[in-house]
Length: 387
Image (spheres, one colour):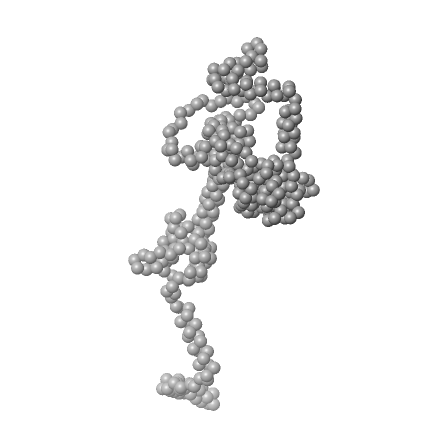
């Protein structure tokens, strides 16, 4: 009896509880400040995660060089130029308006992007190799032209034959001329080129003059650097007249390098007049323009003319007054020997007759072109008796 009673009681209590739960209204629960703040932070995080970015971060383009943007139907899109050029099928190859860094990183790890990136890398390497090969060939060509130009100037060959000399070098290079026997290629008619292309080939006299200026500037810079490295140096000058009657002044310097005396030709100056003031100003201007330390000059040499060695206003006196009072000066030994020989010949009758004979022979042949041809024929007969 008790068990039945208990079971009925429990059953009825469960029904009452269930019915009370159904009819019971929910009670309001008060939350603390910490709990409300936590809930607010969770809500903000959810809002940030679902936020759609409207602007593109410009730093992405520097980090991912393959990324580009475009305007399409008044909408900004980002795309991968490598995949687009390769006609890829991914979203980034067509363009997307989802501006998220995780999507960009995900695309960079796809197989499609890796393959296109590898193809682009190989093509860039091939282009760079091709460019390097072309540059090396052009460099070799320019070097050969400069060597031809230097050879011409070294052996006093006119620049009028510079173009023909360049053609000779090109012919030898094209036929691989060496000690072994080689068969020359047949001559081919070249196409007529635009006159402007001659300047681009650097095989004309104008380009040869430019090459000479470049070579001379390099030699001059190295020469003047070597001269300035010497603690002191000496200068020797001499006047000369050209065929057209213009006056020039040759400058030679002597200095010490590695405890060895070295003499070098420094340059040639045009002179308007041969007075001592003009010569001194020209030498000073020459040193200043070429950044030569003219204050270190300790010796001056000349031909002994009055405008050079004058006691009061000569060039040597101006050097001592303006530059260094301890500068020494002397008369060139070669010029003194020439004057000594000329004075000695005046005292010997044989040399007097000899000089008159030479002057007469020169006057006889110089006044007639026919006599000059006869003189050349006589020279050939003397050199080649069996000719």
